[in-house]
Image 1: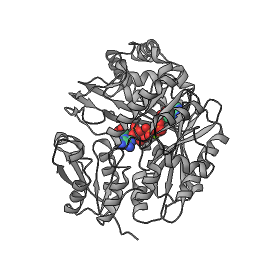
Image 2: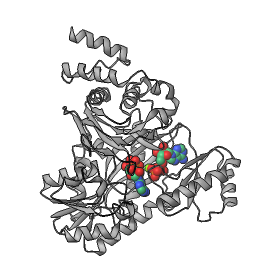
Image 3: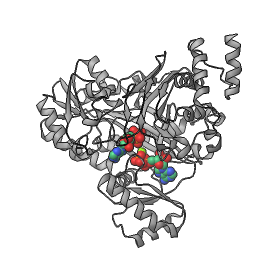
Image 4: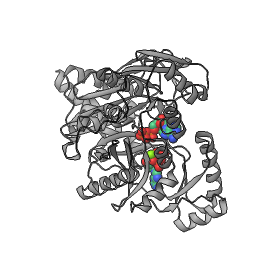
Amino acid sequence: MVGKIKRLLIANRGEIVCRIVATCRAMRVETVTVYAQDDKDLPHASAGDMSILLMGNALSETYLNIEKLIEAAKSSGADAIHPGYGFLSENARFAEAVTKAGLVFIGPPAHIIALMGDKGESRRLCQSIGVPVVPGYDGDAQDTKLLAKAAAGIGYPVLVKAAAGGGGKGMRIVESADALPAALEAARAEAKNAFGDDRVLLEKYLVQPRHIEVQVFSDTHGNHVHLFERDCSIQRRYQKVVEESPAPQLPEALRESMIRAAIAITSHIGYVGAGTVEFILDANGEFYFLEMNTRLQVEHPVTEMVTGLDLVQLQLQVAEGKALPFTQKEVKRHGHAMEVRLYAEDPDREFLPAPGVLSAFSLPHLPHVRCENGYSSGSRISANYDPMIAKLAAWGQTREETIRRLLNALAQVWMEGTIHNRAFLMRVLESEDFRAGKVSTGFIASHRQALLENNYNEDEVAALAAAYLLCGNTAPSAASGSLAEHSAWTRVVTN
Ligand code: ADP
Ligand code: ADP
Ligand code: MG
């Protein structure tokens, strides 16, 4: 039995550090944050009770340096390490080193991270317990000829994936046999570079599927619960930009089957802590296991808003050896929540990161809206890191009310200095198909023209924000989809 965690080191950067510190303060757990020299002016560097500079310029010297992070924890008297998401959060070697150093790792044991972190191994495990996986090849043999044969058997298009992959890296769609060798080469190089492991697997490429995932939680007493599902179908570059719970237009029986499959996995492997089981749902209503993320997810606020739970608090309690403080039956979901990821990126240029200085930046304070942020006015969004600026999440009784609150909040973000995706996100939320719950991972591509049309420029957003401010938190009517209608509405209320 682990004792109470008194001081926690957070081995990460940006918004997730500030998020974890907030829960620790409420729990009276002291926090130690770490920062690289180029992050010294960011909020996370000084968010905790103590802060430690990680010397060096390369990621391998800072946020990815296992020895330095453990040394920082020891020298600051921390008794536990929270890895956040990304970076070392799904690195089994890190989890093991933390434990070996006599510290508590906030996450599952190393062997479970290793098992579920390998897309091939976790696929095989799912098959062995009857959880469906996408038709594909996940064998050890990796020579190109054999993969070509496997791809022909699966049928094109196929998706090449890095076995050790994450964050959409190392993935390539292959339309036909002649394109396979080049795609394999590119995926292997990217995987080697990002994960130090160039093994790949092949999957049938599903057209316009939905991404639906189940939030799971387990403790060390053998309790395995789910905290419902999230729909994360709105993606670009295989990465999520809008997430919500409940998943819209999902038949109840299907929801229950996916949740059952997720729990079958966690109970089979004896999972511990917070995790996410990701599924892909095809147009015929068949779902398949994609992967399991053995960490806190970027989009966890959505689940917190519909369940009223604090997932970071639960993570710490589970790590202290406590049993989950509720049973499955006691977890209830209320209303609807939705999150958008605000990025410094250019929707007009294939969502290419657009690093730069955020010369002015402020987020709104609104009822039922939560903003998670790791920057302030004058902060630099560096090309060295993920270009996510902030997350905005809203809650409402209905999906429609939630969308209106989120649009209102987005309109009131004040941002200058970098190119960003705010207007793009607003167009997604305004789109008729999105409003109707017709979402798929092909949504952005198939609505490209409408979403990229420059009809929602920053001046207009500013005018909208002013209008929203004039009328408090009331957003335009649900039916109003276009800016023209917003403007008309503005005139009505200001006259
Ligand atoms: P989530 O899966 O939580 O919805 P993402 O897939 O966008 O979120 O990943 C969260 C962040 O972590 C991104 O910055 C992504 O680049 C990074 N990331 C995810 N998996 C890995 C990994 N295995 N190795 C390195 N970085 C990763
Ligand atoms: P990562 O570890 O990078 O998150 P995932 O396996 O979770 O990789 O896949 C990321 C995204 O790529 C999914 O959410 C989905 O949009 C898309 N994707 C993955 N596998 C397939 C597939 N077989 N067919 C179509 N799209 C897929
Ligand atoms: Mg994934």
